[in-house]
Image 1 (cartoon, rainbow, N blue to C red):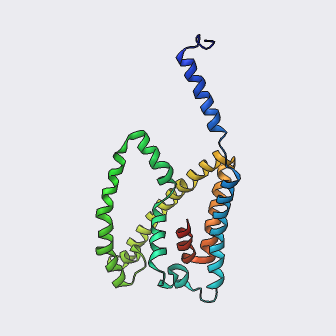
Image 2: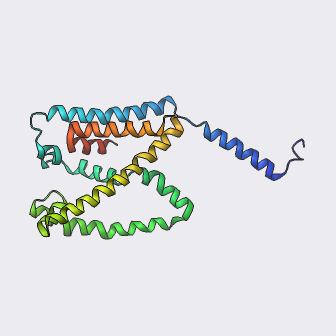
Image 3: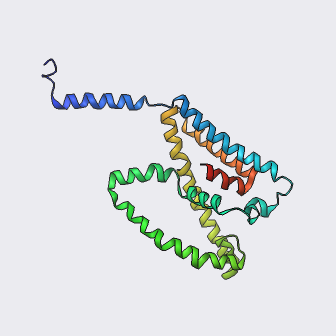
Length: 210
């Protein structure tokens, strides 16, 4: 009865205030820090491991293409991980929540693109022994076309990676209090470290673990 004089709007406002307070106090527990720290340590450890065992045979082919002797499983897992980013985990749910479930229709494009890539483009690249689509552009057209395509791709990736790194840094800031810029620096440092030390082989196995 003592709350009967309050309006429904006041009660609702109080509930929302309590919800916002409880949400704002959400933070990592020690188990969360353990998992997060372990993942960073494992990623760095994989780079160190392959950097040590391959240090005597680390040439350009080994560093960039893992000697062309990686198995199907790590390559498949790395491809899956490459398509999973902060945009997928954070942006897609927000997109669906705000604009509806029509976003799932994008999945139909994979049924067209993936077979085309596997059975039309990749056999050509294998026969020509090229390592990238941009190398093919030079063979098929001209060196300037390759440079143009490479430049556009680099620009796209710089803009894309800025979002991909900054989005999880914002989420990490909310649960740990760690500054977003510092989080970005930490993430970039670990990724650059194991990639530089272990090459593409370390990248493949790190993606597999993740």
